[in-house]
Length: 365
Ligand SMILES: C[S@@+](CC[C@H](N)C(=O)[O-])C[C@H]1O[C@@H](n2cnc3c(N)ncnc32)[C@H](O)[C@@H]1O
Image (cartoon, rainbow, N blue to C red; front, side, top):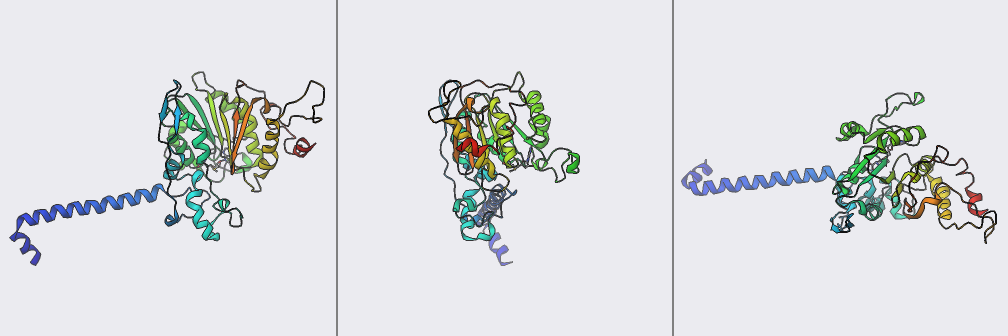
């Protein structure tokens, strides 16, 4: 009553008061909306991550990525894989936000017993690799085909898509096993639910033949999708393949042996999660060291021993195509040299039968 009579006594003040209160409530609404959006987009990749404590998240510092176009012009794209990845919530850069609370609370982390602090988060710091190796493809028109193995719920794929979004010549593909027909595993079906379906692009990617459902460690599946959906006359050259699939050593090796010969000169094969975990450890201890040994191989005159004695190649289908290897913690990039891509037969596209058993002998004689 008192308020009403005070306002009606001064209508100008009343109008001003109402305007101010609209602005104020608009401000509160925008603040709440921003908070909700931020919270939503900063949720950590929920496949393996514990709940995130936002109070300890570390802010990203965006850096510029300078890319060179096909015409040689430098483009300052102001792209940063970490900034994009943290917004989308991919575990590829999840280590930054996870590491502090992992250091403080060992019960909340995936590798609580790891001595090395940066391993404790169970998540990764892959932005330095991707900022460096994907930057050449981030420019405006650089035709390239890209394949990710292991779509899961699409956060990685979305991050790559955003990073490469300036490049109108980029064609992105992904392979995922969980979107095959549901049913018992012993019938060749998938019993654990369709992870990929949760992503809003799922149907569109299927319709456009960009998401391929099947076992990406199986030669027949790979070969079918490669020859019918990817290696088309109008397709851009295959430049990047990323294995973020099962992280089982035999499957990581299968990606290397199938894809490396098919990647065009200058392209890369990235294998994620080269970690000391039981199912994947042999890729770290058996495959990477053998490829590394082959990298420095010189051979000798035909039929003769080299200066260091007998020096066989460990992986004859990989070495002739290998420019280099760049590994950072838990991730390796295998770089293609300028030898043209080719289409090996099945024997030349699969992991050699002795790749794991023969490692000790090939490395140390
Ligand atoms: C680590 S998650 C991928 C995460 C995703 N790349 C991301 O960044 O959000 C591994 C995915 O690979 C899929 N996968 C496992 N084995 C596979 C195989 N042999 N072929 C295709 N996909 C496979 C799993 O179903 C799972 O969705």
